Image (cartoon, rainbow, N blue to C red; front, side, top):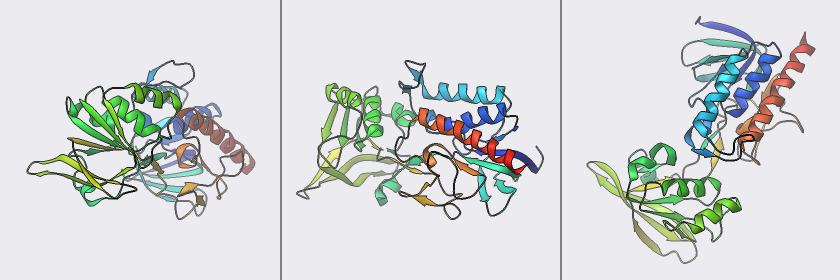
Length: 313
């Protein structure tokens, strides 16, 4: 691969939005380049059963993303395993710098960088990251066979993680600041029926404790949100599942954002505040955050990029 690459359409990111944009961009004969980023396949590669992808009653997340990648590649998308570290949207052609040292220039850009897990910001959480504290049950659940663990959160992610972890753990304590979950009803029903899961309402994590040599979690301290009472819970693993934040580092100072950093797009469009730059998927979607809506936006972005490029010509 040469150090300088030019393309009509550069797609940054490789989740459902990015790969779908690649399919539609290729069908429009734009010969797009797709740079996969730090997590090829996006968040679905760290989940297991996907039960709401149309056409598949159940499909494994990593398998679905491999199929999408193969589809995009088959119709002509050039897929590159690089990470974009700098992006200049101040003038066209737009310029992106990869960790590989390659410079990519493009007449239009589709941003599909997605989102990543949020953390609580505790010093002890940071201390034990990777040594008992995790944000990915499918990555690390295997290590907690027959152990007691805790999950922090109350949305879909937390409930899905708790349910998945019952495949390994002897007990899962779900710690939530409120007394009701924000997850889909079908997931809540499954959780409440699972004997291995014990919800702990009106509590928040305040400290993770454990051993230093070797580094490992032994317990957590949680505080009652109404009384302030501190309780210690013995556990070997802590899974933080409090949601996700948009991966906007490349564009936070260049594009208009709102709702905590999500990229603003025009109504019924993927067009951003800079002509020729489009955003799709969890980078811009603070409302639905589903694989199928991300794929739909990837389609929209490619069609809009095609239209934009045609108008420039």
